Structures are given as C-alpha cells and as structure tokens.
Image (cartoon, rainbow, N blue to C red; front, side):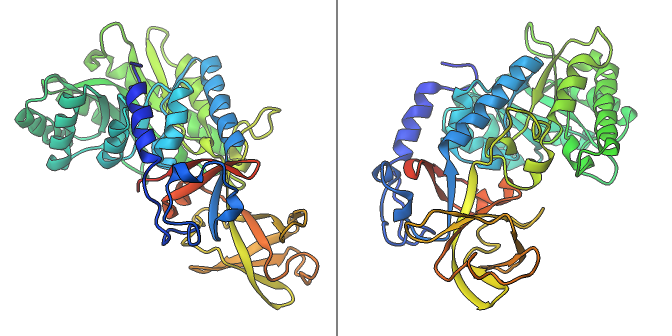
Amino acid sequence: MSVSYDAARLERVLAGAADRLIDATEKGFLVVGPITPAQLLGRSVDDLTLPLAVIDSVSLEHNIALMADYCRSAGVQLAPHAKTAMSPQIFGRQLRGGAWGLSVANVTQARICIDYGVRRVLIANEIVDPREIAWLARAIDTTGAEVTCFVDSVRGIRMLADELRRQRLGGPLPVLLEIGEADHRSGVRTTEAAIEVATAVYIEPTVRLVGVAGFEGVLAGDRSQDSIDRVDAFCGRILEVAAGIERFIEPGRDEPMILSAGGSVFFDRVASLLVCGGPRFLARNVILRSGGYVTHDHGYLGLLSPLATSADHFMAAIEVRGVVLSVAEPTKAIVAVGKRDVGSDLAPPTPIRAWCRSAPPRDLAQVVVSSMNDQHAHLMRRDRQPLEGILEVGDVVALGIAHPCTTFDRWRFIPIVEEGVIVDVAQTYF
C-alpha cells in the first residue's frame, strides 16, 4: 500500500465505477444511453450529442507529469486540490503520478476520496459541524486514513476537540493553523491571534498542531509586480507565524512542520519562499495545493500560470462543444452552450475552432463570446464584421474555458479522448 493511497482499492473502485450506468438524460448521452463508461471505450466522441465537455487525455497526462516534475525539482510536495474536477478518474491519475495526497474543500469531498482509497487527505478548511466531525472520526478509525484540517479560532478548536472526544478518536487529529488577510477568506489575521489559537490546540489532547497554511490566490488577480509583492508578503507572514508558534507544533515522528499554500497561479512564489525563506532553523515540509493546473484552461490560468511562457508549459485539456443554432443577424452566431454548461465567473469562454461534418476545422481566433445566457453563447467577430464564411448554422464550435473549477460541476460524465476516441470517462461528484 502506498502511503498516500491504497492502489489496490483505487483500481478496484475505479473498475466498479466503469460499470456505472449513464442514463440517456445526461447531457451528451441522448442517443447512446443508457450505457456504461466501459461500453464507451473505443467509440468515437462524435457518437455523443451536444453540448458536450471533452477532456484531451494527452494534455491531461502532460500537465500531471509537468507539475510532478516541477515539485520534485523545487523540493516541495504536491497535494493537488481535488475540488477542481472532483473526479476519481482524474485524481487517480494524479496519485499515480506521485502526489503526496489530496486536498479537498470539505468533509463530503474527503469522503469521496477516502472511499476511493486515498489515505492522505488535507481538508483545506475549518470543520465545526459536529455531525461532520463525528463521521470523520469514525472514518479515520475504520480506514486508517490520515486526515488533516485547518483551524483559525479557539471556539472552532473546542468544537472540533469536544466532538472528537465524544467519538473517542484513537489519536489526536492533526491540524494546520490557517493564516488569512483582512477582507478575504478564513484564517487568523495577526500573529497574536495565531499564538492564541496555537495555545488552544496545544492544551487539547484530541488535536495536535502540525504546521501553518494559507491561500495566496485570493490576494491578486494578475502577475503584476504589485500582485507578486502581495503574494511574497503573505508567504513571509506564513513563515513569521510558523517561527512564532514553532514551540506549539507537534509534527509526526521524524517529520518537520508542514507549511502549505499554493494555487495554480503563484505556486512558483510559494515554493521558492516557503522552502528557502524564514529562519534557517525552521525545518519544514512545504506542500502545494494547486488544482486547476490539471486541465489548465484557455483563459485565466492560460494567461497567469508561472509556466505560461516556458518552453514546457501546461496545456489546455478541457473544452466544451456546442452547435451553432442560429445566425439570424449577420454579425452574431448563437451557439447552444450556456452558463449551465461552462463556467463564466472569471471570464467568458474562448472560441477555439469550428467544423462541419468531415470538413477540416477552422480557427476562430478572430471570434469572441460577447455574452452568455443560461443555454446560449453569443459569438461575434472582434471587428464586428459579418460572420459569413466563418460560422454557419450546424457548425460545431469548441469553446475553451476560463476557469476549470466552475465548469466541471456542470457535468457528471465527461469523456476523456485521444485523437477523437474515448479512452476513459471522468465521473464527477459535486
């Protein structure tokens, strides 16, 4: 058994999931369902109906290998955030690629991971619901999974510790003290508050403090020098707090304290500063929690990834396809892909290419999505000239996404393809 996951259980449960029935009411499966993922293998993705989300297998594997190589060279561990896709078929590939464990956003996501054989789970959030704490305690005792969560308040620690005591968890639950910034998400705001919380953990026998965590991604939306300075300062705060509360930290036997941060935009700054910054005496195990890199995108991450200009960079692995329904106005095409099919919270999707039947695909670099409705995307040329010869009724349009995290949750079954042939089906749990 691997430390991070039970390989035999993962493969067994994945094999069972391949026989899960996909009903004809699922988007994309109108004419082939009911069918199982196993029965789809080897079929053309063109057998499915539109709209349809599609993942490219080669790009997916490239991204997983590239991030694993980066982390090894940077001297950090990777616990990829499973919430991006929340798909065992994808996080299974990440675990096989050498991931230290998986990060999740809540106990429900932790359960999915544990059910699939993941043995090292980092819940990047506070847990205060006694029902969730009770379930987690039972799951740890039953499976032996190593679960770590965040804490940021004395009251939260007492709620967590009291329920763990009632459940008689066999050993103390490891926790990370979360650092935050004003006007942003959770996490203590000052070093004084950090010491207060660390002290509260130290006196509770059902929990033990193993390190410090935070998330820098909420602090900046670009890679300008000002944004990088804010991220660097935040990493400095993590190091400062870690040094200030080191006496309260009780890592596992022969293990240094954990320092964890890192989304898919500033993981380079996090890796560099948390590994090499701070006092030399501060032994640390730096764990990145990047998630979006796994499929990357054509928008937000495509522009801001620290490897965007590198010779070896992440590749956009996911797109959403739809058909042109109407060109009622010469300058506007209506495509049957809407907000129910693709994330548009950070930016609208990006038209990539269009094709019709056996004709070769046409590049859509001059076309943009001008607006979106629930079920429709409005496409126009950048220069607002007529679309004649570029888009026609019946054309299939591939749209690149701008945020994988808010696209995956719109699909329960996504074909993973290689040269147009289905090689796997990503099943999501949101």
